[in-house]
Image (tube, rainbow, N blue to C red; front, side, top):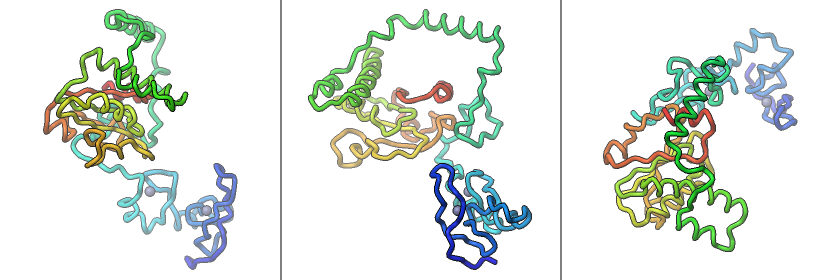
Length: 277
Ligand SMILES: [Zn+2]
Ligand SMILES: [Zn+2]
């Protein structure tokens, strides 16, 4: 029943709108192993005996007899990176299992008018008691201004550099560009903000960078910060969700106990909620 038949799977991938093209795996079906569950001519019992959805992610299926081995190698499995990686630590729903990274609960929907009114008053109070300067007046750090003045700086680069320059300007205003400091960038993406921040810190000593990013990134700025490169201290990058981050246990923070500055340029609303916790 499991002999290989060299036929292309007839499943049409909805995203690509074309045939799957992987060879059919079983003689009883023109579908490949991954799409066997979509075969309308197979009964449920036969399907179940051959494939089951992966318990870690329904996005793919598994041979039930191979399930134990698969759970050890599935790329959807949660890898605990260390004591600083505490699942759902910053989530308000520590006991709930959230299967999808984007499946954060929509708490605002559950808030009634009275609570919302209180929240708005609280935010207005916090704004008025902490924000002295209007947000549209900002200073750009000199190092970034020099980059902006270069002739080959295009529109898109300029926009990002201005945002980064403004963030670094804020750190400078708050007197947070110092020696003996670990900068933690949340939602670091390719590490561009940390890269330019490190350029503004060349005269400081004992500087570390920790970058937290959930997604896989290509063309990372980390390459400028490898051993032997001139661009400042190495980037320590952890691929993890901010909701699982327990800052005090990050090894470099625990070992050196320097000042810690947490910054972020790219976070969405729920990411910001998680980061603030
Ligand atoms: Zn297929
Ligand atoms: Zn799996």
